[in-house]
Image (tube, rainbow, N blue to C red):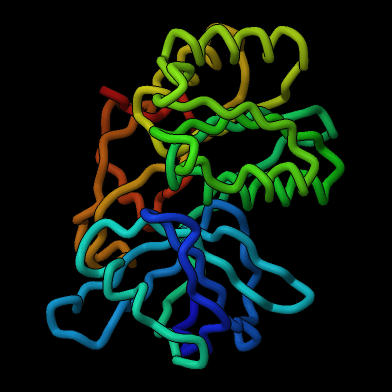
Length: 261
């Protein structure tokens, strides 16, 4: 973990709800892994004093360029859209526990909705570098909100896009699609982020098919370092249900441990 003051290379809209930002992370000496995040100070305005967690969309080890994909939702992210190339971004990271890929080159299945695809995109790139094939189900409200589809395809992933707008994103429809893919592709593991309904579906499928799975949990954070417990969530452990801090004990957890209502 390091406090970085990195130059913004670009910060631009993807559509009317999502933006992508890239920064120069040449000063970062620690390894960066899919599933980890950076705690970012969005602006100098006193109204946005608390940092916001942003999962890693992509980190290029050669160029040392770090990319984030973010949803413009509140005053903090709205302020972030005003940051210009050449300005300095105050970041702490990398933070949190990353994803783990199983040994071997068997394919993996990713299931994401909305900005949850940002976290899983980084995993798809890592899997491709290790020689594993990726299949991704990407869900969104509208076609315009489908994120990272082209980037996922460029990494070699087979992408199945489903939307509320097209009437293809209902849980029972995604279940049939996922079951078909699991039967045909022989996945070694499944990963999910961005929707509790879809996460519950994938959790049930992983348990019934005896598949290893992981979930990247999302939460509001204050410190991002494990001191304040603002991001604590229930997880299943050997002794029963316990509270775990998403910022440091996660954000990635074994899928079987997730308590999903």
